[in-house]
Structures are given as structure tokens and as C-alpha cells.
Length: 502
Ligand code: ADP
Ligand code: MG
Image (cartoon, rainbow, N blue to C red; front, top):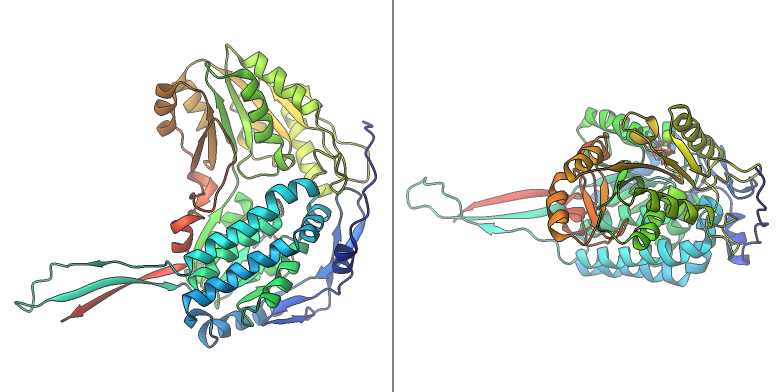
């Protein structure tokens, strides 16, 4: 299929100078080579060109990074600093993100494929605000006091309370869809709680994590508090997860890898939090305003080319309005302008990699083979970049792979329904439970439906809105633990009870 794709504009001088830096890991406050000297090529998915190379960390590098994080935790000032000092440093990191926003947007676009525009309105400001929000938590971590009913020795009194301690050294393994924002979601609460970190970005998108490492040092964090290892999941990632010196693993990524990580972490009973995939339903009740729903449903699936864990990838519209909704979302899909991320005219960039493009196209083909009706899209472009046309598959059923499995691309599946109990059952009929949205102004119907939906977040008349203060995480196989807010901080602490006989 041939659609004219514009040429990728040249990045700015600042971004180019970063791309030309030697391949290094951040360990103990120093930029060092990997022991093996091996590197990984970084590809711009809009052009297929190699734009940089980064270090390929292996087990020895993991040992060094964990040792540095351990030393910073046990001997360094970080967990013992005044909370206000930790707060100031995390806030300063947010300031540095703001100062270097334009360069970070370009790097994110070149690395992931997303548009620079989207990075400038979503990824980078959200990263800055996330760090600022979590900076504030450093000074607000608290326990409680309470009375107990131990009656011996007779007449005794107790002072009883809880306090929270940082959990220790944390390994943080993140995906490629929002590389810098995911780094902030992991580092922000861990640092606020007083933990030290080894961050491993996805092998497809290591650039902004490395740039963030530079900004961490510029902000003045003590050495070893944040270590950044670039490397593959099966080597560097696996070595981190099984490492006895790691106290907690925080992971965002695929369900398949989440299960491997959970098993491996069991050897030393590490704390584990997992934010895995989703197959989130968009449920449109019969009273909904069709025009509003069309815009909302298109945004829910096509934002970030569908590479969003909370993407609204299953559309269930009431049979009264189903045809109009499917037609409208398909027309919206057709109108999206594909192109390279640095081109200001582009509305949707390429997928992150050839592998992801092949995976998504494999799903489209399987859907057609299983009898889904292709309404629009369903093609990848003949181009060195990894472009896939926004796709709508209609009249699917719950047994199809395209309905059961996370595609992580711009592919929507649609099915009509008749009543609320039926749609609740359909919504829950996958192994996932990350999120859902309901579109309606019928208050009674919405309130009846929300508790039936097994999902960590239910949006009403919106989709994919996340906030640092709103817990986020999955029911069922979408993982466990909740990021953000108080619960996000608690995941990086151990609770200690203090019982004093007075
Ligand atoms: P995808 O298959 O879409 O790339 P993954 O879940 O494989 O998603 O990747 C998410 C993150 O998990 C990446 O940082 C990747 O390197 C890492 N990863 C992959 N496999 C493993 C593993 N066996 N152990 C630890 N981390 C892994
Ligand atoms: Mg994988």
C-alpha cells in the first residue's frame, strides 16, 4: 500500500549532540562502559536508520549497579537526608526536565516514533509534573499512632505507632511506549520514599532514560542513588530481577514478562509490583451523544498509535447506535495523517519497531481469518519506517484472538450489545482488568454498570486520563499494586510497628 510519507526533518543541534555521545551506563555517579564493550543500535522507527548506539549491559554490569545502589542506600546520605532535601532534589529534576523539554521531546520522538508534538503536550509535561508531585510526598510520608489491648503486666501502658521505611534497592524495568514518563513513574515515588534505584529502559527506547541520568547528576543527587542500565530484557533485565541485592522489582510491560519476573523474584521474596497490559473496553450506552463518542473512542484507541496499556481497544456500542459509531470512528481513522514524528504535520507516527509492526499485522490477519470484518486500515505501508494504518475490525466475537489479546497498536475491535448485563459480561471476558470507559449521561445506568466492571480504573465520558494523584493499576492479569498517590508511595516502603511499654 502506498501512502506518501514525508521525510523526517533533521533534529536540533542539541539532540544530535546527545545522539553522538559514546555508549555509557550510569553506575555510582559515573558514566562507564559496559564490561563487555558491546552496544545496541538505536533505530528511528520513522526511517529505519540507526541514530545512536547505547551500551549493552550484562550480568557483570548489573552486579556493579546493584552494588552502587546498595552502597548509596546503606552508607550514602540519601535515606538519611532531611525529607525536605530529597524533596528539593526531585523538584529540581522536574525543573531540569522543563529546561530541556524541547530536546527531550525530539529524543522521545526519534526513539519511539511518537510525534514531537504529542511528546510536548503529554509525555514531557506529564514527566515534569509527576516528579514535582512526588517531590512533595518526600515530606509527607507518615505512620499512625493507636492503642492496643494487651493487658499484661497488669496496669501497663503502651505507646504504639507505625513508621514507614524505604524498601531499599529497587530495580525498575520499563517499557518503550512512554519511555521518559515511565521512568518518572518509577523513580519519582522510589526517590521520595528514600530508596535507591537501578533503572532499565526498554532496549527499543533507551535515549531519554540516559538523558534523564545526565539530568539526575546535574541536579546533584548523591552517587548511586539513580543508576541507569541500558540492555536487553532477557539479559540485563533478568539479571536484575534475580539479583539477591535487589529488595524490590517494579515492572511495567507485557503480561508474559510480568509472569516470568514474578516467578524469578520469588527466590529471594522480593517485593514486586507489576503494571501489565490491558484490553480495555469502551462501553457506549444507548443514550450517548454519538459525535462525542466518536471523537472519544478514536482518541482512546489511536492515541500514541494504540501503544498504550490503557488503550480503549474493544468498542462495545449499543445496537441502536452501533453502526453510526463504527462508521464515525472508521472515518476518523481514515483521516489520521501518518508521518515521521518530527514533522509538525504528522498526526500519527510509526510503531516503535519492525517487530511491533509485524506483531500488530499478525493480529490484523488473524482477526480477518477468524471472520472479523475489516472496515478500514489493516495495512502496513511499504516504507523503511514502521507505519501501520489505523484499523477498525467490526462484528468480532469474544472468542477471537483480536478480542482476547493485547495488540498494542492502532487496532480497534467492535461489537454491538443489547443490555447492561450482557455488556458487563463482555467487558469482563478477557484475562485483563486494567481499565474501561463508559459513555453515557444516564446516571442510573452508569452507577449500575461501574461496580460490575472488573477494572482498576473506570472512566466515564473520557478515557486514558491518568494523574499522579489517582491510583492506577490492574485487576486480574493486568498486574498488582497501584501506582500514583499515597498507594504509589506505600509500594516503596516497609511498614514497621513500634510497641513501647511505658
Ligand atoms: P515488549 O514485548 O512489548 O517489548 P516486554 O514486556 O518484553 O514488552 O518489555 C518490557 C520491558 O521488560 C523492557 O524493558 C524489556 O527489556 C524487559 N524485559 C523483557 N524480558 C524480560 C525478562 N525476562 N526479565 C526482565 N525484564 C525483561
Ligand atoms: Mg517482549
